[in-house]
Amino acid sequence: MQVMGFVENDVAITLLAALAGFLALWVLLTKWQQGRAGGAGGGAAAAAAAGVVDGTRLKSTKMPPGSLGWPIIGETFSFLSDVKNHPQGLYGFLAKRYARYGPVWRTNIIGMTGVFFHGPQAFKTVMLGEHTLFTYKQFKSTGRILGENSMFFADEELHRKMRKQFGEPLSMDGLRRNFTKFQETAINNLSKWEGRTVCVIDEAADYALDNIVYMMTSWKPGDPDFECIKANFMYLMDGIASIPFMWLRGRYYRAIKAHECMCKTLLQVVERRRSGQEKHDDFIQHLVDCETLQNEAEKQSDLQLLDNLVLMMFAGHETSSITIMWLLKYLEDNPLVQETLREEHEEILRKKVNPDALLTWEEASSMPYTLKVLSETLRLSSFMQWLPREANNDIDINGFRVKKGWKVFMDLRAGHHDPALFKDPLKFQPSRFEEPVKPFSFVAFGAGPRLCLGMNLAKLEISLFVHFLVTKYRWESVDKDFSLAPYVFLKLRNGYQIHVTPIIR
Ligand code: HEM
Image (cartoon, rainbow, N blue to C red; front, side, top):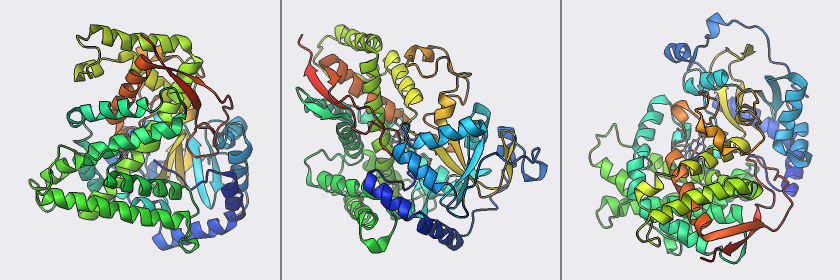
């Protein structure tokens, strides 16, 4: 997931605006240092599979409409102004351009030409063309914070190898081994909500982090190592959305240092597991146990292992917590859906011999309405508004020419709100997922080689959370300001403040 270095609070936005020109120079300098990605061309098989033409057989000479704005600075100021002032926040910038130019358009932000588009065929082309036609690109500054050795930054072969190794603990079998841990975490976290007014986004962020760290290391909140990882992780997240200047010794610098500290702590665990000094049934243990069966070529280096562990925390933290926030908000706005959902979970309890016992795996696997509510939440909120790539060669997208080196942005939100694909797209209607949806029209978890690796974990942890929430509590928002935060992911400015009361039986 890309968090593009945009900032969250007003002061920082003003500062960023003032520094936009300077940033543009920095981007150019970085590009000059790195050289432009190219030559990954090849990919004839993927191109054929995706039904696209390569650089030598381009059909279109039409450039996408749009304005590239001022030299270097491009449309950065309009973009930042919309982030701060438009009621739709960041998306306001896009909405205006769709109205002006139609479904495909280009812009230039801090020195980068980017093309925005949507539609199942285009999503398929770009998502399946990963590594060959397109490349997932992060800013170098993001890499310095997250670690440049993770699968985010890996080439095709290494990426496949890393996904295989990290995929097992996140598979259904892997999740099943941690099933009790997830339930414990959900019950413990929710018990802190009882009778209180809480900020859902903050509490859900704790829940998501507790889950992933517990699953990875067997550490629980309160353990010194857990608290150390958590404190550093907060610095890391804060730095992701900061201006990337080391010499300011500010948020960016602290985030890089926090990443180093996290890796140090995690390496100690890995080493204790390798030496047999400590053994647990968890994610790290699985990776270490696998090492003993691997030849040297298959093994990941320590740097790769650690950066991938940090990546898992990063990728699974805000995504799940923002989803929980929107899900609760939509349930409050749609009481009939909330009651249907509650009924699904009450029915599970009624069938249990001991209703106070934890759920069985089978019970947790039979929550069909909950999964529809989750899909509808992801579709309607589309909080990850777009997925970024870079074109490896000149290529056609939706009938327009995209040049090698341009950024392309798959606009998930526009795709998920397309009335041709989803009837009454702005209505919250989980029942729409009773019918199969057209391929590549619902892509909240991505698709192709970069399909979300934590998709099953997200579905499970959110379903469990929902189960314990709706069977034990009711909630009501206390702050009715539902304006959006100026942030790259769509979320409520106030994080959704609710008062929670227990259900008396
Ligand atoms: C509802 C919650 C979540 C949503 C909506 C979500 C969405 C996505 C999407 C759209 C992508 C593809 C990005 C792209 O193609 O550019 C992705 C990738 C990824 N996600 Fe998730 N995600 C969620 C939860 C999680 C969790 C809990 C984890 C924890 C392990 C996770 C780990 C990852 C990883 C590691 C990748 C990168 C895969 C790769 O580069 O090969 N995600 N996610």
